[in-house]
Length: 433
Image (cartoon, one colour):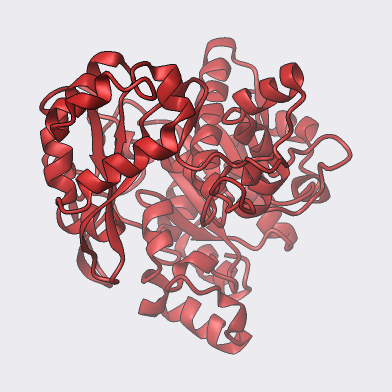
């Protein structure tokens, strides 16, 4: 059975119970939505998901207003950018799992589903008496994905984390910044997004294994371990050379260390953006041929015979001087001009773009239709980020929208669980659904 409004796709018939919230958890099931998976997102009746609001959590709203808004379906519940992205294509219900009848309904949903996803801290499901053993009793073929900063096992298994703290705990934070300066970190919640996608891969692998074997699969996923996949060279540098990340010449900035390549940096260009910031372009010459082409475009043939730049090894040793020479050439030129002329001769060069460039200008994104226009019953027409992979036989449906509060109550509790309209009304009055 396919839920109401879901697109046809090769994942039709796959049903996922989604207890995820914030950013890292919702991405996993969200990856499956464009291909027809039925994802039932569950919220407490009087505590809507924080991301429904305009990027501001609901904690500052009093309980009375929360209850009224939840019952009336007020527009503030649909304006959150993260909500519209992270829960695009999902179904939505409310369920009070603290009430015995609410827990009974959850048990029935588990029996009818293929997977359960959550990113609670600690062992919340265990406290609900939904241990892995008990989940298997309800559904022997269930895939259970738990996402946490440090996973659910081990001495740090119960720690509370979110994206930036997972970055710090993994070692990722120490790797970003300018040489000789304090680490800059990786910006806002990098591991919430990258970590969420890796969690989605774990969900897919669990579903595949359960389908092939008929046996349930528990996927205990730690976001900090996913971040470690980005740190292999740094671990190897410590193991082989004894060099830690806390040292005077570290982080490396935009220079390439493994392998050492020069030039490899960003260079200031002519013009400023809307916020008054300089424009930049990234340039790298990975081969001697590319460096020769760069020198030709810059009309600097003398660099090829200069012993400081004649070989890549020499260029790496003298890259600060080389960077000054390249910066002098790029400074009076526009970033896209530099990008296009260098790309035309095989040199790696890409304009450094901000969000406004990606949204308002980037012709590559427009060509790939990455910003489809969708219709929302409460907030009207707007663009949303499409699911990036382009599959030839099973294209993603990128025109889905996020669900309204309780939008799929009748379908889930009526069609799936067989409750009558009277029962649904009574349960709602009691605050169970």
